[in-house]
Image (cartoon, rainbow, N blue to C red):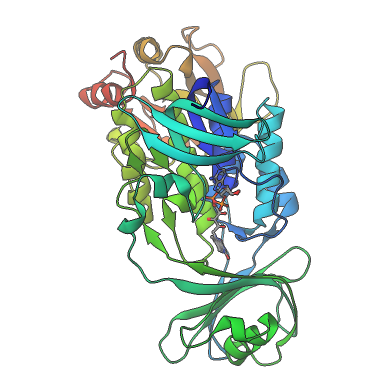
Length: 488
Ligand SMILES: Cc1cc2nc3c(=O)[nH]c(=O)nc-3n(C[C@H](O)[C@H](O)[C@H](O)COP(=O)(O)OP(=O)(O)OC[C@H]3O[C@@H](n4cnc5c(N)ncnc54)[C@H](O)[C@@H]3O)c2cc1C
């Protein structure tokens, strides 16, 4: 018999980018969790190499955007090259205030781990999940680590254990992915004559228009290479650089000369999306739930967004503040996102007639130029959302109705709700009930974004609009609250 050393709310398996992001979300919300990682130390080699604009926004939300920018490199453009000819060059533009950035997985993990430590969290390294099973009310996990073996009884287990996920295998979900296995070669590639630098190069086969390789520029002047090895080539027959020469060489633009390939990694991937991200008390996130082709550079970003979406929901359910149905929206929203996220089940209401700005389900508008009373420093809304609570933002007056609404919604969320009244710059004397925190719209940015109002926006902890309407509560708000709060 194994000793039961503890019971806990959440066990996170795997401290890759996704496990670290989820741990950070639970740590911020004081959930009793453990984060285990099979490896004794971080792998210096990076698999993933880029972050999407939305992921940068999440890092901004976490308060670590500057660190990400310091270690990363913004691409200037993305080139599509077919058989040596550049067919398209799309300059990078900022999407809603953020742009895609090249950042190694190693650096991404370092930043997330440092943030976790600052908040008092830690990784239990060299500790592996060895088996997992669902019981009626719990998940039973067996671990092996420096202190020996142990059996844990967990309310929830989240498998963030990557493409070969044991969590997924233990639940026998593996057979649900039936796409063919494909070989890829990854590495850090030095090459001369590829101009201009600082741009992404997608190399496309001329025979069947399929992507063959992706070169992502890195801060050191080299490129992160992801290469799909054609089925007819046996990669074990060739030196890795020679393999790159044969497969990607003929597709490179004229003048580009391959020089050196560092840290080559040959890997075999079965891209696929599981039909379900949850089985009983076990949830899956990141590569464990959805492994995409390394070409396209979206995998790490998608996984980080999984964890950001799941974190607040899991915390709310673990604290007993919402029914487990809230967790079902995790998969629905993430799937919707993969099919171009718009809305999702956890978004209700409408933009009041005559107003404008984010619809329910959209990310909250990026409003800046706001000032708190007595503080001569301008803030953006996102700066005020760092702690990951629900926020009720009112604009355009009717402050007493907004205060009543804040009280009613606050009753359901307790300390998890912060209510803000966004006032025009010239309204110093306005009577605003004291339970509303004031923000002055110094530059008129809020009014230009949302319109005259009065209106109210309930923002979810992940920065999406959950409900929007007039400050007088409506039926949609009641439906929204019944989804996210047990007290309703
Ligand atoms: C071979 C390969 C190549 C890739 N290439 C690219 C690329 O070129 N570009 C790109 O954007 N993305 C690429 N990806 C995807 C990218 O690496 C991931 O999306 C990203 O790392 C997020 O992954 P994750 O945290 O879900 O999993 P991972 O980064 O794989 O982390 C999982 C963690 O779980 C730990 N673990 C596993 N099993 C256990 C266990 N039983 N107990 C405890 N810990 C465990 C592992 O040690 C690991 O640290 C690639 C993925 C793979 C598998």
